[in-house]
Image 1 (cartoon, rainbow, N blue to C red):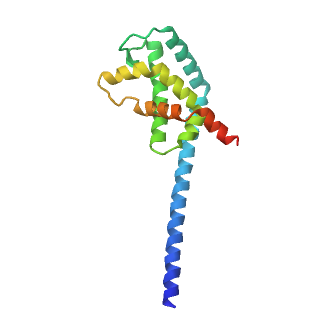
Image 2: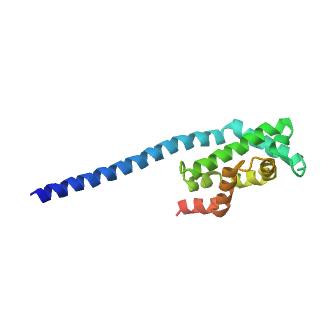
Length: 160
């Protein structure tokens, strides 16, 4: 009889522990979803879209000078280019720290990550060479992940 009570107690403990793990995971997913939903809203906002358009156009007009940093860009583009790089760096940090799944981010904006990294890379690397060695490392890592896991392959997996 004592043996049965011990087995029931141990089984109850295992079930409680499993329930705790599931609840922790679900809580993390819920928090991540709320955070990522805010990020998506920012990315899709009219203001953000217009900013990206302005910066892309302006960077297309500027001939890159060797060693030029983001902070060396003309006033009319520097602040917005920096905001864009910080946005993608924050997104990369969220992926790196498990706040949001890599495939979710890359499936949504992997092409943009790659495109913006290609535009801003020389400026970011110049910032690093001026002393801030880890500047925008999350952005760079997110770009590498986006290159390894193409947006199209993620989307095609969803269509199966």
